[in-house]
Image 1 (cartoon, rainbow, N blue to C red):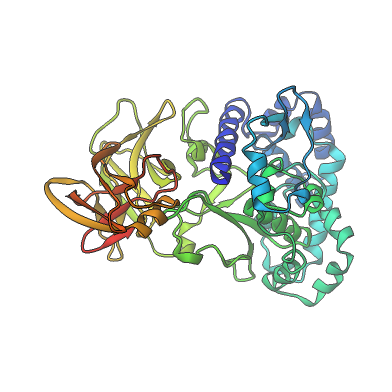
Image 2: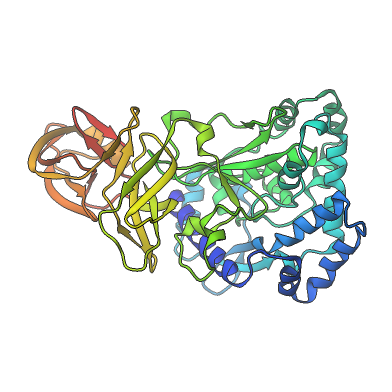
Length: 500
């Protein structure tokens, strides 16, 4: 329930990114002012507040405004059939089943209340105060001399982390925790300082099921009011807290795991040695492998596909964002995948690397086609990727699924139907993979990926096990029950079963 709900919200958000990217995006100061409508007066006040064109504060203010076009906030609420807005206080949900009952209530619909396009709503007082407080925290930090201006501008200065409701989070933290500022005077290492700050939020502000009934993109005061977050909001909270005290911080984002479902977000800080340190050690717990790891930025990153192509070009949902850096290589063994596509799609200039997550393929990286050749860079080893095209919200296979093994060999999972193998599963293994209980006599279906999930055979659970005898040699496979499970993970089989 919860996982499906998250994906629906994610798809709505990325659709909005496409709209904003088409109409606004980022650009010169003049372009942003033109998109601000009547609010351009406030943006001009911000720029005019720092008359010295050579000052760092003038540069910082210009940097914020030139990238405002990339930022917006959506606010949503739950509504009854009669249109009445239902006020929610997640603190009243005592158990997980209460949350599930609420979200599964067919009478309730989640609707958008408002869309705030930041160039049209941010006031000059808010922006000026943010610039001044950011510089004050930088100047007072014991690690000031180790923090480069460009890193300050990208990871301390911004008034927001993602698309949360804008709020003066610097003043919020300083007033709520007045002792932190003095306590940090003994620290010259931003990583140690961040760990000290984090201790103030670890007790109650953790991931809780009831957080999913809340509106997305909460402000900092809303997060503290309800004391309940998912991993994204928790990472945003920590990042804002760190930035309040002059620590360069951002959010490392795993959009989709490569060998399990969903994804994860954590806060990270920049150390004196120029290396980033995660503030959450759960990133690769349980042997999880990311499809990719991205670090959020405030400004547009020119390497992203969204920054390279015209706004009218249709892109896969995740890649419509231009505010991130690919930092996958910082998190473990990676390799480049250079191959040729099996088929060319008319007028397609790009091929995408997709991972299988929650029952669907999702593009997480891209390569420009050079005739039939492509190169996916910094791909995680032992994660299955599907080379694919994307058009009209539809993925088309450009090549068979593949992965890079520990020896840097590219393994292509093309089924060989001429040779068939026999495979046996215990009922417990099948149930674990489908995330549901299976019993004697239940029918289980075997599929192989070949331009889609192709049915191979079916059998029944007998004596707490099930046997399939028509498994093609090589290939990517999955099991399904009578009802499809979007949580089922695919597998390969050579000398043993390997779940992806």
